[in-house]
Amino acid sequence: MKRKEPVNNPEVKKRHKKRKLIWLIVILLFIASIVSAYLYYVTVYRVKHEPESTSNQTVTDEVYTLKSRRTLLTLTPEVKEAAFNGRAAEIDYGTYIVPGLNGTESLVFGDKGTGSICTSMTPQGLAVTEDYLLVSAYCHSSTHNSVIYMIDKKTHEFIKEIVLRNKSHVGGLAYDSVHHNLWVAGMSRGIPQVNAITLNQLEDYSFQDEYLPVTYSQSYDLYAISRSSFLTYYDNALYVGYFTEKTASVMEEYDILEDGTLATQTMTNSLDVTDSITPIALPSDMRVITEQAQGVAFYKDKLLFSRSYGVLPSALEVYNNSMQKLLETDAMLKSIRFPEKLEQIYVDGDDLYVVFESAAYGYRASSLMKIDRILKLNLKTLLP
Image 1 (tube, helix red, strand yellow):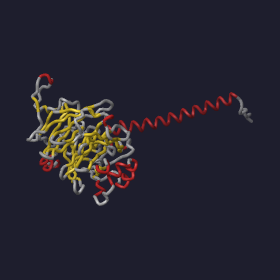
Image 2: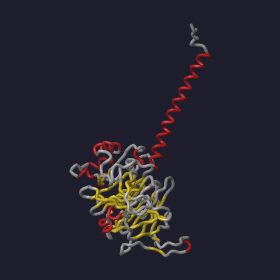
Image 3: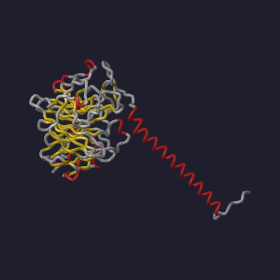
């Protein structure tokens, strides 16, 4: 019979300690491998790969129930109150399902004449007209052309998709209610642009007729700004800003002329641009803004910025709309906590419409508060 070693034997203690350490290392390595595999899946694989679609047209169903999203927004009580208080009689408490999150009819970039279903469309821009909500989205895997969803403002029903000409991020939309033009942020030849589509074009367009992208009525290169990340319309001018992660950014003002076009300048050799006939829009003013800006909107005497980056909570920052050119944190009047991945914001009367990218396929696995709806917030409640 094998003889037992004394428990208090130093050698026995040493061996026991070594075994525990080995098991601890094994467990930690196992956990690390699982975490690494998950991070790879949510940050790399889902970015580059789209799941197969089970539909042959744009999917209009919700990803999550309205009840579950109302419960989730309890974590941001100011947002929840402004979104749902007094809206019980409205369709879906005033919210709009973002269509196409599980499948959007578009084009494989470079193709024409044949539709294709994209399952990784990611919402970015938002504009509100007299009759419609318009939401822009880009393909997260860079496979398909970007699109704009047209939603009936009154019935909340999806009408159609507008397929754009390239794969731009389309981070901003702006509606000129005087000239009835929708302005779209974009990039071409590595140069930031703004492009216009008339309201008549939007209403007449049907992707299924010829499977061709929409035609722009106006296009302008922007050389006074690094990127056209977001934009809005206010008082007969376009305001164009760009997103930065850690440093201050700028927002440029571009006046709209009486005929609905932008003021332009003639190309010169100093701009180092050749073989282009796209006019260059000339800014009339500029303001310095904080980093991580995703959208801007004007409301009475206030200037509102949506601020978001990564998995951290978003914020709505409120400033005075004055002649001040430096809009940094110390000039901010108020900051309101929002769910993560807040994108463009749009003011319509006393309502603030907001859209999120958190429920898109590329972010769904890594987001905590996934919002698949456009929320309509009462600004009298949100900004008392």
